[in-house]
Length: 413
Image 1 (cartoon, rainbow, N blue to C red):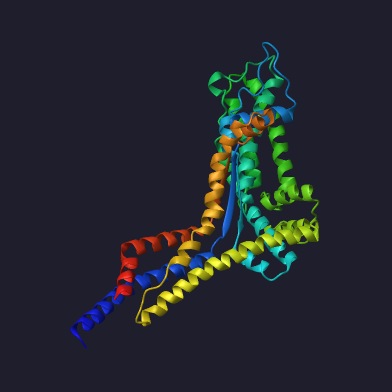
Image 2: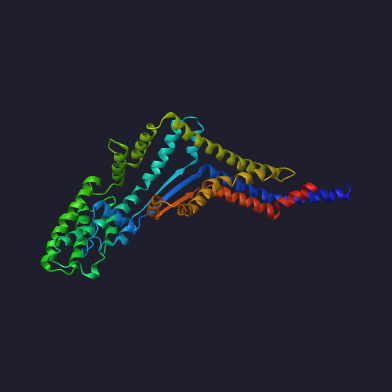
């Protein structure tokens, strides 16, 4: 063998040896991306709404039938601290699509695909019902307490001054603890009721009233607040006096969807979720089921193609460790790996960011009204496919930092 050929062979061996750590890293990246696509959340849509002080006050005025104030008339709602009440009125729900739902669509059974997707979605919504109910109860109880004091005070307006200025904004911080206790597994229902009445009476005790007037107010508050609490427990509580959020969800969904669940464990997330799913699916015709299933099939095929690209790269990177030429092509994974995250998260988030500007450019009284109510609304898209997107970035960096140039040098030898 001539010396030149020996040097060339030796150089080729050294260059291929340099590719070994690259291939191991590429294989690990590919496996991580593959697993994240196969096992992680493919797509999740989250929506949250924070009710504003003005919106809450407006809703209360509308539902109570409040009339415009006449000159010199005192505003009934003036002493209600809507800001602290609205701070608790935050609602969050999420809808997600997992890979197993998509893979179900490939079986060809449209009914099974839609049923599984809807059941997953409704289960996720209902799993958050505790937090939603807690927000509703905390805001509702604060509002009830504040209104009780104002209502009682207004009944003796001719005999007593309004609440002293320093007590104009009622201290309702204790309601949060009462709600937590009420939603616990074994609450002391009688004690919670007593504490709730005491919370109202504390406001009365601090008011600038005579002892006789305070006694009258406290008697009325005990009746009004007590009845309010008893009605809640009777409608939504269990035998221990604990509020069961699923009972409230069942009441709301049962009324809107005409659902009637019977059995020993009727108010469970699983039973309600399945009942909601069956009701919705039964209302769909075959054409609708087919179209929904077709969308899932398209997403499933797309997911399988991207997963195949990562799986192929992982296999090639590992097998090439035992070949003389150890270089592998990264083009297919780099081309497809970023697509799920960009299409499912990136583009929707850009649209959400631009939507306020688009709506602002449209001159419409109706849209302006909707925009006011949507100020506390936030939308978010998430997906574990971000790992696949990061994987394509990692492949680009690997190429830039020596992998591509090393492969080129091998080809020239």
